[in-house]
Amino acid sequence: MREMSCGFGFDLRYNDQHSAVLDYRLLGENSVISMAQKVLVDQGHKFYFEGIAYQFERPTSLYVKWKNDQTGSTFEDTVDLRQVLPRNLEDTNLYFIVHGAQLFVYLALKEKYVQGSPRVGGDYAARTNIQLYPKVN
Image (cartoon, rainbow, N blue to C red; front, side, top):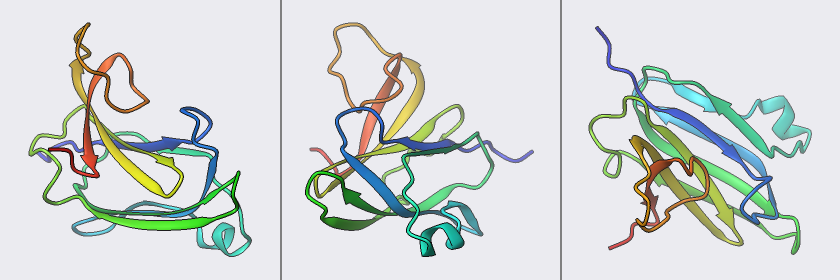
């Protein structure tokens, strides 16, 4: 039986992100897991939220290109996920948030948030979240 992997998504309408995604690609070992449609990217479409349910491909990298709506500046970043994702991804959700020029990548674990623990991330507030990128010590 194949092992389940994480869900994936982003929602720039929350967390004071003030940006729009211009392009994104979540790659796995063997295929593209999720990506912006090329025709929409070529037309300059702005993405504010997208998501997919749990799937079986383990993510290996995430590319995001975004534009800050307040400054008009465009940024892009690629994150190697191979070294930062935990082994077991069952019932988890991978997501990102952008603030200015910085991309933040998080994983919402299946464990519930423990009252009084530090808050990490911005989505999935009822679950424990870990920051994958940039790496925190």
